[in-house]
Length: 266
Image 1 (spheres, one colour):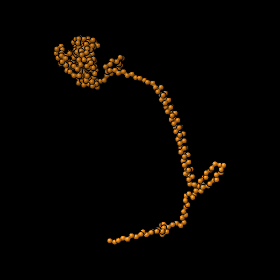
Image 2 (cartoon, rainbow, N blue to C red):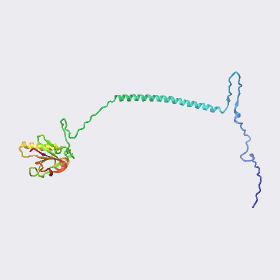
Image 3 (spheres, rainbow, N blue to C red):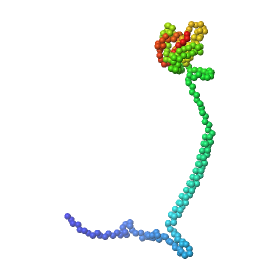
Image 4 (cartoon, one colour):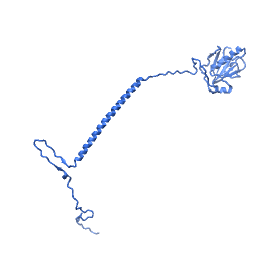
C-alpha cells in the first residue's frame, strides 16, 4: 500500500494580465458613483423668511415624476370624458324610454276589444230561411250518412200527408222475409235518400200518388241504409220502399247501418 503524505495547499495566484481575453483595457475610464452626479445647491435661510428647499438640478429622478403627473392627467381626462359621454347617452336613453312608455300608454288607451260570438249548430239543425240553388253531394261520393240512432228508436214520425210510421233502429226488413199480411216482403223501388225521415216521406208520398191515381199499391214499410256510396253502386239507392212490414221484428236482419219504419194506419 502506498502511503500518502499530507501537503499544505499551495497558494494559487491568477494574473488577469496573463489570461487570454481578460486583459485590462487601459483606456477604460471608470465612471464615478451615481450619487456624485447629484449636485445640490444650498440656499441660505434668512431668519425673517420661510425656509425654501433646494431644487435638484440635472437629477434622473425628475423624469419619472413628470411621467407620473402626465399619466394622472390622462386618467382624469378619460374619466371626465366617460362621465360626460355616459351622461349624454343615459339622458338620451332615458328620454327614449320615456317616449316609448308614453307611446305604449297611448296605444293601450286607444285599443278596442272586439268580441266575436260563435254559434255552433248541429248537422240536423233546420235553417230558418229557405235555401236558394242548394245542392248536395253526389251519392257516389258520400261514404256514410247520419241516422240519429238510438235517439229515434221506437219513436213515431208523422209525414207531410199525416201518415204515422213506427221507427226501428238497427232493423233491416229484407225482401223475401215473411210479411205481416201474409206472403213475403217485396221492394217497390230503391231511391236515394240522405236522411231517415226523407225515406219515410218517400214511402208516404207513394201512397198519396197511388190513391190519387186509383192504383192498388201501398207502401207499408221502408228500410234506410246509411252506407250511401256502397248501396248506390250496387242497387242504385239506399232507401227501399216495401209492400209490407215484417211479420215478426225478431226475424229482421240486425246491423247498425240500417233503420226501418212501419206504417201504422193502413
